[in-house]
Length: 190
Figure 1 (cartoon, rainbow, N blue to C red):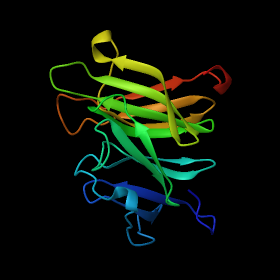
Figure 2 (tube, helix red, strand yellow):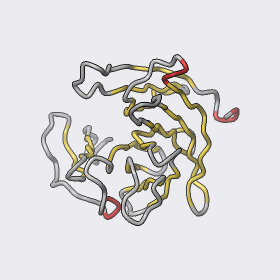
Figure 3 (tube, rainbow, N blue to C red):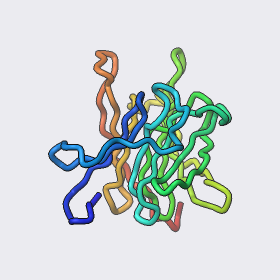
């Protein structure tokens, strides 16, 4: 994002000791870390996972899994102004791993992994409506259907309806780092 003086500024979210912190493009901290109230009670590796800059709503971040007081298949999205929204994930084992702007809403990336069964990657459209977020599944990819899938947890908008997904190999010989580029139809046809 651009700072008030026109220079580039990075907002980085950290897991485990859940916090956000601003840095310059040389990696120097510009301010102390801060923890919005929406991060309270998040699990060690199930909290702050997704973050994007929405053209109208600004920075929006999301929890990978439920935190105390939420249903097992919910997540929480929040902005830096204190607004919060509940996100209904695909299942209690499906984790929200990233999101990107999509029209007036968001494109949500979820990964559903359980040992002994196929890996599922779900892309959904989230629209902001009175009282919450509405979910519309756009694609559900399964590893046992021939899709080259792995630990997808990065998503960015390339413009023109194109998006890039990236997987994390977790420093494992059994996993791969993959890039996947796809194009969504015009918003009016979604």
